[in-house]
Structures are given as C-alpha cells and as structure tokens.
Amino acid sequence: MKDVFELRNNLINDFSVFSRSFTKVAASDIENKLDEEYANGRYWPEPLIQINPHYKQGQSVDYYVDSGHLHPGCARIFRTNEGSPYVFYQHQVEALTLAAQHQSFVVTTGTGSGKSLAFIVPMIDHILKAKAKDSTPRTRGIIIYPMNALANSQLEEFNKFNLTDGSLPHPITVARYTGQESAEERKALVDNPPDIILTNFMMLELILTRYEDIDRAVIDHSIGLEFLVLDELHTYRGRQGADVAMLVRRLKERLEAHDLLCIGTSATMSSEKAKNKRNEVVATVASKLFGTEVKPTSIIGETLVRVTNPALSIKAIKQSLPERVRSIDSLSLSYSELKDDPLAI
Image (tube, rainbow, N blue to C red; front, top):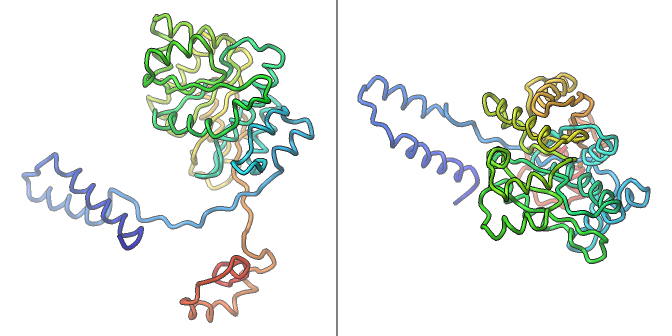
C-alpha cells in the first residue's frame, strides 16, 4: 500500500462491487445511470484532510484536588502510566464546572478530544464523595451507548484508570450489561452492584420491561440514579430518537431519579454557522431527549490554540511564502522550525 489515498480508493472500489452484487439491473438505461453516479462518487465523500486540532489545556488533576474542587481520590485515579497527573483540556474543565453546579450539559468536541473524560471525571468525583457518606453498594450512574462496540471500548478505557487503587477508601466499580455477559457475570453484577453500568438503549429497554429476577435486581440497585449519560447523542434522531426519549422518561420515573444529572456527548449536531445558534439547536435536541432542560450555555464546544508562532500572522509571512512553496522538497524540520515555517503558518 503506497499511501492512505490508495487505501481509501481500494476500500471504496471493493465496497462498490460488494454493494452492487445483490441486484442485477436489467434495464440498460438505469444501469448506465447507476454506473455514471457511482463513477462520479455520489455515494461517498471526497477524502478529508485535516490538521490535528490543538486543544487548549487547563490545569492538572492535582490542581483541582489541591483547590478542593475534586475528591483526593481523583489524584490517584487519573494518572498516566508514568505516574504523571492528567492535565485537562479547557472543555473538560468546563464540564467539571457545570457538573459541580449540577447543570446538565452536552460536550460537542472533535474526535480524540477526550469527551469521555468530560463525564467520567465528574462522575468519579461525585461517587467518591457520595460513598464517603454512604458506602452501601448501589448504582449511581448509567452510561448508554448506541452500539455494544462502543460500550466494550469504553470499558477498556475505564480499566486504564486506577479505579481499584488500594489506597482508596472506597474503590470505584464499573460493569457492562449489554447482553454479552455470561450468567455468572450477570449474577456477580447483582451480588455486587457496580457504581457505574455501561449498557445500550435496547438492553435498558429489556431491563425495564422483563421480569427476570436479575433484571429487577439491577433496577432496584439503581433507585435514585444520579447520573445518566447518552454517548453519541447525534445518533438518536427520527423514530429512534423518539424511542430513546421515551425510554429516558420511563427510566427516570422507575428509578425515582428526582435529582438526575444528564450528560450527552456528540459530534456536530447543527449546520448553523453561528456558535450561539448551534448551541440553541443542540440544547433543544438534548432537552427533548433527556426530558429536562439543557441550556444553550451548557453546550460545551472545543477551545483551540495555535501551535505555530502566534507572533507571525499571514501578513507577516506573505513575502516569504512564495519562495517557501518553491522549496517544498525541504520538509525535514524540527518542531521549533516547524512553528516558524511560513508554510505551516
């Protein structure tokens, strides 16, 4: 494979053959039209080339623990493999602030921006504080995913944190309940109710409507639920969105979740160009799904910063740019050189 573009073209060609293999078009005019549309690339977008965004950073987890905003246990849980404290992005800090104010919110930042931490950290912080007052095993948070694959991936992410650190007075427990679990795993989940359950909306529907002893026990252990997270909020639209909205309402009623904090994560959900208009659209959709008010001011976007020299504007490098373009073959630059390079700017 020469490059990523060749990979993309091969993938699309293979899928084109596969997708057209189920039907034989007898009418030549229709077949010709289909051939034309496929050749014009109607059914897939052009390659998208982007520079990885550089998200603005806030303070480390140690800072928020020392300032009293987070439970001391968070400093032990959220550390890298090398032992360094996690440093939060600005949007994660905003999520912590809204959670502390008990305001439901939605995080709409890019891929790889750490959307999960935006709800995991406030959930863990709250659970640590709550268990210090009442350590009775119960489920305080449910995270709903549109697919099992996402739930499985998130469970792996949770396992990277030091949730069972021996120095914690009350370790945090997380369990998956999606229909993939064995009878032994389901029984263990009932015998030792996890603090957080990862599931999908179809399984949650079954738990609420089936009358098996294990399902009923899972519900009973979740009475008074405090956190509800809908991951990939943008996938819940149309009829499926209505189904999930009704499910959330039944869940809140069944679990007597009178003080529930609702959190959503999403890719872009609006085509509006103005930020305030986008936030209004997302807030309206989230409010309908959760059955609770999500304010436009509680829609968290990304805050980006430049990685190139902020003192060098387009105007400043305009004269040197043509010559730089002509010497395009010299691209072996150090990071410090790249920051000042006219082409990078």
